[in-house]
Structure formats: C-alpha cells, structure tokens
Image (cartoon, rainbow, N blue to C red; front, side, top):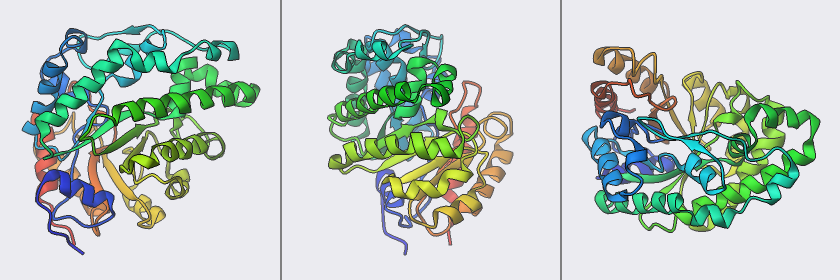
Length: 348
C-alpha cells in the first residue's frame, strides 16, 4: 500500500517500516567522507570547529538532495584515539588508524571506555551531530554512524591477528568482543543523546563474506550484533546494518537479529537478496561506487541505477544506496544523477 508522505525524512522512515512511500528514498554515502572530498576539506583542519564541519557536510548532502544522511565521519578513528591509540589524518576525508592497541588479554584490561567517550574528539563528534540536526530541521533522515563489535575488535588488535585468533585463542576473541560490544554500545548511547537523530547506522565491513566464513559469522559475529541491537532497543530507533563483500550465504540469518534494514555490497544480487529476506527486514543498496558512480557518465549512471531499482524497489521496504563508500574521485554530477533517477522512479 502506498502511503502519503511529504518530506525526505518521512519517506525514508516509511521504508524502514517496510512500507511503500511515495518514492524511493536514497542516500549518497555510508561513512560520510564524500561531502568533505567534494569541498576539499580536511577533518584535521575542522576539529576545532564543529559548526563549520556540520555546515560543509550538510550543505553538500542538501545540494545533491539526499534523503538519508549518516553523521559521524571519522568516528572509528576518533574513538580509537580516545582509547589511547594513534591515528593519522589525510588531506581529505576521514582519519585512519595507525597503531595496534590490543595484543593480549591484559591489554584489554587497560582500556577505558568512559575515557574514550569523554575525550575531546568524541565530544566534537556529538557537537557536529547536534549542529547537523539544527541545520536539518527535521527535513532529511539523520542516522548516527559507527562500527559493529567485530569490526572494532579487528581494528583494536589488527584484523589479521584477530582473525587468526578465531582458530588459536578463542578466550582472547571472546574477551575482546565483550569489550568492543560495550564500546560500540557506549558510543551509540552517547551519540543518541543528541536529540533529532532518527536511527543508527552500523558498519561491519570486517564481517564480509570475503573475509569470514558463514560459520564464523553465525557463531562469532551475529551474537554481538544481536547484543548491540538489544542494548539500543530502549531508544526505539530504526537500525541499518552494512556489511561489505558477498554476504548472500548469511542473509537468511539477519531477520532474527532485530536489525531494521541491511545494506548490501555491489557483489550481492539484489533480486536474490530480496527473495532470501522475504520482506522480514528492509533492503538497501547497491550501485557500484567505483565502476558505476566513479567511472561512468551520468547517462550510464542513470541506466545502472534503474537496474538496481528494477531489481529491488518494488513493494517498498527498500532504500537506494551505493554498494559501499564513495571515493574522492566520484563526480558530484554522477551523484546528482543517481539521486534524480531514484526520485523519478515509479514503483509498482
């Protein structure tokens, strides 16, 4: 059934309710760095000015007419820094992690979550979110972005060492995942204190089908996603989970987690994903961020976007997104065409 909705925010939230809004909602980026690329802005130069940061970020999203916006660029690295880790800033976009914090169980005991949340940079993230909410005035849907426990664990210990520990040191894995579940939940709880954020965007790229077997996903990753969503349930906000790579073999597990919508990589067949999920949760994706949005002409972008829409937009409960984050090389005109095509699409 088609509902009568008016604002981009209402249209997006209807999709999360598995309904069919007046048109297909669309977001332009996941981690949120692309708006800064477009403005040639560096977060390193903006860390003392949350108002300017939010202004740059929101202005670009508004200009391309995005319905769905994730707030929290650089959150993972800044949270890592708050725990005592080293990060590096690039001339554009988000900072990167430049050290290992955890090599043994004893290292976990030395990490202080409350210290990380109180840190200057995490406080800055919340200030940016609050200013973005003010600029938005309830028009577009704003979700706070962050990382899932499994991906955070790989970043604290180094992904190679952590994944090897799945076979060699299960006690260490369990201890670290217990810690990162608390870390992730504390971060989201702190950020959701900024009134006006509609939901949570949870990125778990290290849980990719290209990195982890379906067996380990079910036994190790899934319980922590469930635990995080249970912690956030009292906030009664919709949730979007993004996992990179081909996760077709584990899609059937996701409706039982409590997540509202899954965002899939370009490697996933949308028609098959729709069939597997069976309308139990929403689906988002999955125009290729490089081969299409970066490399093709606007006309070709429109054609490929329509292919995604034809595969999955019918019936509602769908949001158009890139298959993964946008690089600094993605032209703004291609992103505008991507959004226009979604807004013009007539669903069945």
